[in-house]
Amino acid sequence: MAPAAARTITVARAEQGVLPDEVLEEIFLRLDAAADLARASFRRIVCARRFLRRFRSLHPAPVVGFLKFNALGAFHPAEPPHPSAPAARALTQAADFTFSFLPNPESWRVLDARDGRVLLVAGSTKTTLDLVVCDPLYRRYVQITDDLVASMPSKGEIVFLPFLAPTGEDEEGSSFRVIYNAISESEIVTFVFSSVTKKWRGLKSLSILPNGRFRDLGWSMRYYVHSSFYWRCLSWEFFFFVLDTREMKYSVIDLLHGVLRQDLVVVDAGDDRLGFLVLNSRTLDLYCKNLGNNNVDAEEWQHQKMVPLPELDCEWRISGGSNGYVLLEAILPLSQSDGSSWEKPKSQYFILEVKRLLVERLCVADMCTLCPCIYTNFPPPMSLLSI
Image 1 (cartoon, rainbow, N blue to C red):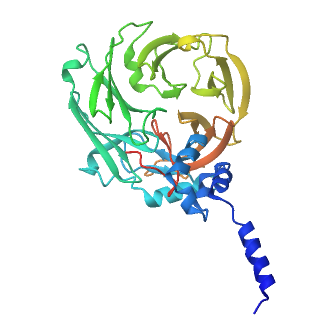
Image 2 (image 1 turned 90 degrees about the vertical axis):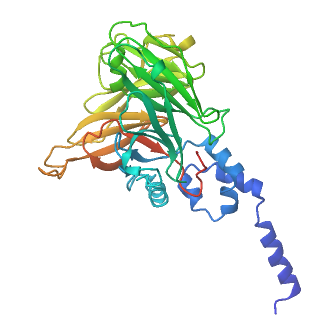
Image 3 (image 1 turned 180 degrees about the horizontal axis):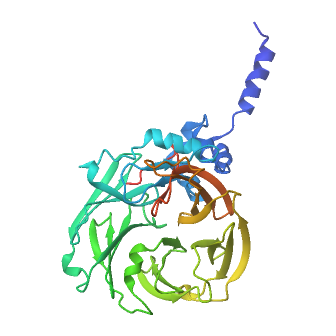
């Protein structure tokens, strides 16, 4: 039996090695990778709701893959060696990206993804909304159906554009909004659905055209920067259609005057600056400017940095941008993509993290996936309910 003095020293050392929970929290908050926390042995701390809210406020959710637009059950997770591969694997095992928990699951198609939620639509009716917002990890959903035919544009063919609004700072984590644009050649009528009121709210329509038509918005990529959505309209040359989500007001601005019509994406350049990345054959060029009132021109665009792309024998394409990430597609020659006459050729997809301007390979998927929806979320058990 050990002497009493030796036992006293052992107990004292053990007591000195135990850190208070408050200190452990501060240490864990400084870890960058959510996957590291998910594997931590201090589950009682990292799974506490208070800690998760603090961690999520300091660290953006990692990109874990993307969902194929206008399809069902087509989730492409991050693959090794991408740092999000462990989180993607955990989410793929825990979540249901086939959406089998929805009523008549085979009838739904993916439209958008944001903050761990996915927006889907059933059918293609032009007067009755049949939407659902779901959380594929917790298998929860809210079905949204209403008849807004009386408020739709009255002239010409209509293009419908529903999408998810980001969660506001003053909103609960499980509340959400859906924005729904009904677009004709000369008018946009917009509705907003709130999960809190469970009702649609109509906004004033926009019918002033600078030069061209509104209908191009239905086929234009959508970017969210500094609390505003941006659409670049194909027939407007340099014009962007902008929706300020704080005031829910629209504007049309000549944002890119003098810029060639190249493949580009609007990004948050930090320090209250607006930026856009222009795709060249082997590089991305970042241009920035300070924002003025109502996002109008405050200064000329300044070339900030050139980002080299991986050296591949391929054609590069910008596939989308969301939540601080840009999805890039490397379209390989047919001889390199293992394509065949009966199988669609594959492309390599890369993710650019805008904050660090870091390009990393994400996965391999079908070539030329139309408007893929970037999916970001924290791995279990760090994910909170989003519905």
